[in-house]
Length: 145
Image 1 (tube, rainbow, N blue to C red):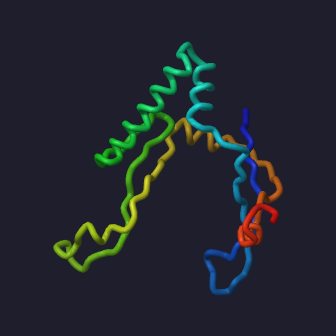
Image 2: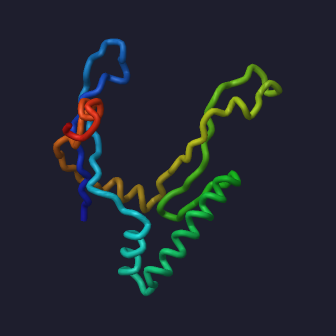
């Protein structure tokens, strides 16, 4: 069964040619809501014999373990879901000897989808919906203000 991802079409300056100011129109995904750790635990409980409290305990512990693994420089593999790994960016140095930690400006978490996640992504359908808000709304201080 195909799952449907909602999107809207938004105008943006062409990133390949910002100088021209030419607008291009792109798909922007639109969330239908959020799923937090409590919702996840309730859904897992419905699929197996474990209680919601037990699932919550495992998921909460998983948050800690994944964080510790990343902080320790490990690639965290989550089976078919995918893997998480840290990525560094910043300034370069002219020589290896001149490089220091102070040149590291940003740390990001990279997610690489695994087979289960990739199959889920490959089997999506799409549904166009209206734009939830625009840049003008943001500038006016709120949604539809």
